[in-house]
Length: 213
Length: 213
Image 1 (tube, rainbow over the protein chains, first blue to last red):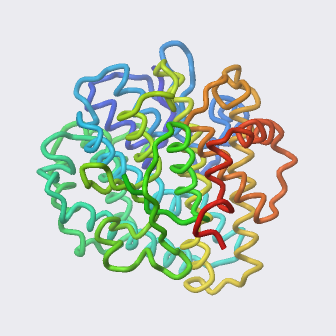
Image 2 (cartoon, each protein chain N blue to C red):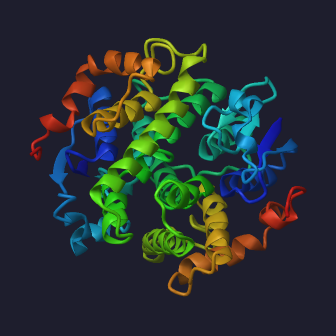
Image 3 (cartoon, rainbow over the protein chains, first blue to last red):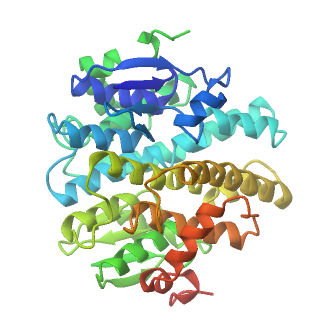
């Protein structure tokens, strides 16, 4: 398989973690988002949304959207499982992952920040305020989901590393990189610290990728 | 089971369609988003993100995030299935659903449009331009995914109604309600027209809900 990614894309970061947890080795191709490589005709052919990541399967099929790719990996190689067993717990884990993937990350990614400035005429300070606002709203919600739930253990769902954890760490990484305060989210910080000690999370860090700048 | 929703929420609209397709009857509770009922302490207790929908399961567990809820419904009542069988096709369907749920809808929902105006000081015309921009970018990407793929049939994935279809119709409904042009998306329009003829899609329409205004 082959993964098209970008070191700083947190959606690609998620897929790198999932591949590492499952010890699946893939070829890597790099799509430089700031140079707009994602809009090159050859890339749009495999990812019509012009986003990263894209996973090319062994049969040559391009798969897009990080959560869809990770569910695919979990289906073709079920161990270690990225979802718990009971339908209610699976929904809980997916809801945490989606709270990041739908309600935080899409508001703060490169194309949105670019459009706030180039399309809406806002300055960098306004874009930074926007970024910090959605990080705060999103992490507050996530902290509230995690802080009071008895299913939380060392990781989001007991001691199993799941899709929720895989989405959490790249999002917290982004918040810290943009100097957003995180003191109000002790559960998130505790879980992320435990996850960051795991080799699959370490190997997937943006700074450790071949295309890192 | 009990569904907390709002007639105009397209995430709640998705869950209503899924429940209808599976002929699962639930009690309905209404959370008025413009009156900010979603921020009432009693509701935040069950949905810490202060969003709709929330599904209360038969065991009393609150489930949040529409895609997580629909995967749950598909797991507890597998027929009719909302996902195809092969892992690659499942990833394709999920990627279409996520292209809506991550890359279009979160940029244009009530809280984001509110923050553009109240938090960023933009006027209604600027907020409308923002809305139209992300509808156009999102539907262009989705049209490109659908227009060239041999798996597309009467619906997004052959003749099976899937999560992709369930996400598509509410998103197109919103685009039309906001008078965004859709002529450039003939595949989306054709599929949506076929879906809108189905009873489960009709019954879930915002205007047919008890809390419709």
